[in-house]
Image (cartoon, rainbow, N blue to C red):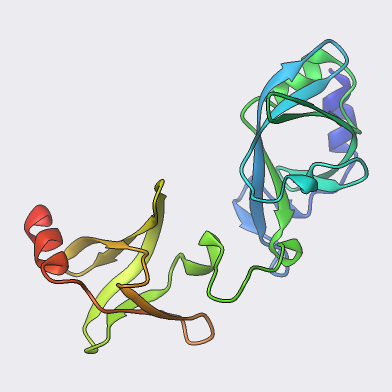
Length: 195
């Protein structure tokens, strides 16, 4: 049995990953993904999935499969952090982490400027037009170079909504909806594709 199995099994996870349920007060967001071991001492190379790379600093706590792990040290190689994690001491343990997400509790998300939202805040929101037509719910967000696109699933199929000021008129997190004013032909074009 490797050192990784012993160390991680001694720590109580904050969520039950086997059943897929999470602690009700602790939802997680991904800030990075382990892409490969780095060297022979258990360091790992990480693909950043956050706009706040300072999260990868010594002493910061991240979660892997719901288990807290401390970043002991960090170096950078070609814009990617190379992390030394507190519970990982050899390349074999680091290899077991390939593809795993590094997460933080949603409660630790950095505050965003007004009218900016994390994807997790928008997934599941109802989408309706300024005229009151219900289009469905945001199921996915596609990230593009110029703008994001909301994938909205409704009774008439899937609708792709560009997340631009000319279309998205308001987001109300408290009431759970996004109000849009579709540009000419947008809904018809999407409906033809799904028919």
